[in-house]
Image (cartoon, rainbow, N blue to C red):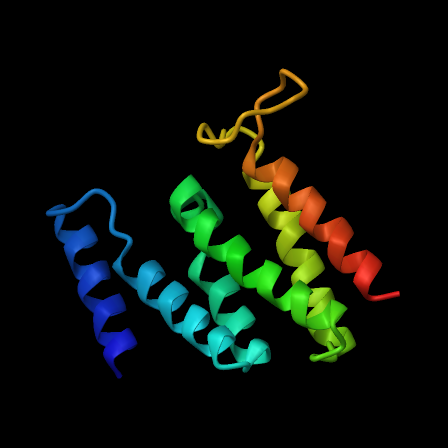
Length: 139
């Protein structure tokens, strides 16, 4: 109920022209997903995190990506330690998510990271690395 109210208020503010951008609903979804992942419910937590970044052109930024990738890295750690078994549907959802992030994040540079290759590190490059990690873990 709270999330629907936030989404409704956000839509109303955007429609009235009071605000040009609003991240409240995205941040709430990201926080809820993070909390579910922290409690071990990765199925719901990861799906909520993926939902938090949609639409990617509005909600994908270096700040949201920072918290998003932390949850995916925690999931990868659990999988590698055989503490969590990922089903095929979840793997496909994650792979599709990384493909979408790669497509949208090519021009979003992560400026707090120093690259050893002289090329700027982007959200897309990290997304490709995470996709490869999950494909390797799923074998």
